Image (cartoon, rainbow, N blue to C red; front, side):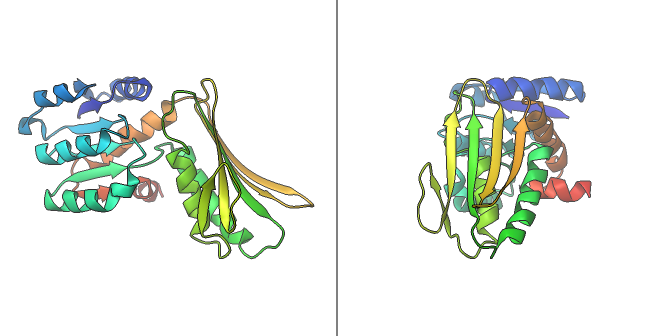
Length: 238
């Protein structure tokens, strides 16, 4: 399969490595706006894998739709525009796969988180919080993974209706977000009570898991139209 990499930072380089290991062809690497002009409709048998920046990802997705090239993006910080992007995807008969985290392990973490949240719903005296730590280079805070984790809890908890960042607020789950050194990514859900503490932890050892999942997503959408996420990958693995 032909792959176009959009964003050649840490994740872009890791994606390149995994693509080569899985015998895919890297036909272009885009690391600035001008390089998009090198692509054309003749590249529509390829898939774009995007790990760019929040301030450029919307433009990148729109360009992919115009070029009729499926796009996978792991860039976060744009989900407030998801509705308009969905409309644009439908209008252009495009293909988009988006995820805050492509790691299979993290997506198992998401499912266990929802199950635990159902068990904890209505249990008195437990206060929920999320601890999230990433490397000092990460731009957005909290991480998209932390927000998705919080939303998984909010979807089944009757007493919580929002999340807050680094401070306690009524009827909300607090996300404590920090940026330290070169931490790949650590997410922990904690339920604390006067008598005990229950915690659920995912600690990424390196970026390979994210890159493998992104390449799997590209393989998954190559011949599809519409909008997809990691739930679709997880269902295909059952």
